[in-house]
Length: 491
Image (cartoon, rainbow, N blue to C red; front, side, top):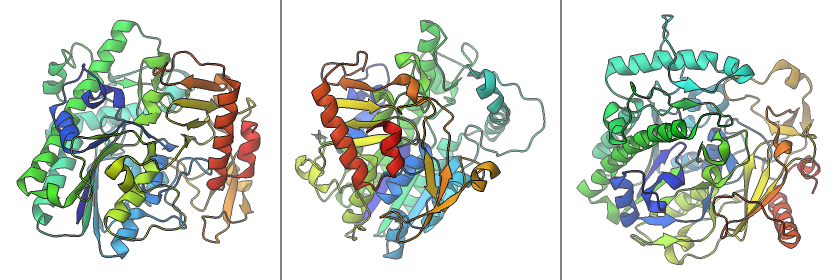
């Protein structure tokens, strides 16, 4: 048996025709819907990028214990477990966070790996020339200062991408096609083809921009700040066209993998997973981006497609409540491998076979932010009870942040904590933490998704709220959440 995962970053479910969008032209995603099972009720777990990938590799949520960080020494890693048990695993990606301090232990879990450079502010080309940033907007104040170097590096990267004549995404899928061509005659391998696109900046070749009536010259902006929308409706519409254009490029790349599945008759014995880490707000709720606002459905309710030749279901849909952390045990079971005891995700084989329910509730969130819970019909967002958002601690044996080591001031105050149930008897560092955003200001909110799918009007329903709080506590207990999380949330 073999498995291919095609993973996109920041794939907004509501922009795909498979989920009712009529504004985008994505024929290969439409074909994917005819070839695979489409999941209608898939949610994120831990956010954003690397926490989501840790969920994917380990099969358990991690956002209650720490923020952005690497695979830990006690983590069970799906590609590593496969590798150790005779399944060849290969990663191809242009997602530069894999090779930064806060993500540098993920890619080495695979048998082999390849990298393509140049996305966003990847520290790629060293060029001290004057390159003007004409693409970002809304990056003011401290956030703007913080992103200054990133904007400069992105301007350099764009210039060199232009010179080399192809985009990182294209190179990633070139290598994906090459791997399949070289190895289609062999069994027992897992291939992860992962592109940073359609993550911002929404930079796509002119041919795709033209498809949506935009261009670099007519509208150069494609990199929004994670901030409130201060632009007018026309600007929002133009920015969405940039995202759609990049999405069409992603669609074309997907088509190349579907063609390989056809060419080598791989549908009969090869699992295909098409997934993402999270979505993105493109002006909805008057927000751009993710992270600093409540995790509305545009961010948290994500697309998922799976073809499993063992279970079938071509062109069918499933309504069971599932999450990113379920992919790890699903892949292990597909290859006939044992699922470790610390995994809290569920294999989706029974969902694929007969839409069997694997959970009643799902919780999700970002470290230090709201903890959210859904039963698929309602979603409840629980905010920190105080503006200080305390007590709040991270637990880790890998003290790094997104692209740097933990600061001296934080490390000076570190203590050693007793092992958690999943740390394999390893004590961990307990680090006092203050988040850079204030989730308390958005308060608690309950939404009835059946009546209000766009989450425009929170409701009052004390009985349902208490039910979901009780479910949240049970889920947190099952994850051995730190005791201070209950105090932070007032539950």
